[in-house]
Image (cartoon, rainbow, N blue to C red; front, side, top):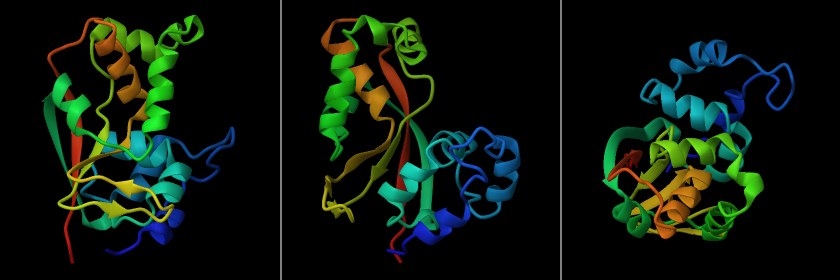
Length: 178
């Protein structure tokens, strides 16, 4: 697998993390030719908004070999099939749903009102377990790359019997082997 950390470093939004970060529209124009197979929603939600985390956590993946398919899964399939080496983080977000402070979050309110997430999480589909550079294991066949807040909140809503739609969008990512 070809590492993408150098590529991602070059794609950094100018001024990332500062008050004067390169606007999404400008960044999209610059990056679209480098990652033309990335849907705009994935580029904006994952690579642009979370650039540093993507670089640090996923730079060892081959971004130029990724292909994306938007699919709809049931709540049960999402909860039972999508794995993450960051289960502790997802559990923390799930437990926050009971905190009145987090009840005011736009994301929590949006998910409670609509019964689904506003943007589809990104899930890697792979034939075998992968070992990340940080020593964690990505369990095959489905592993969450982006959307830990949303997955935690979805789990909490389901556990507490809240309103959920029957199916939810997710982005499935596959990486072609070289």
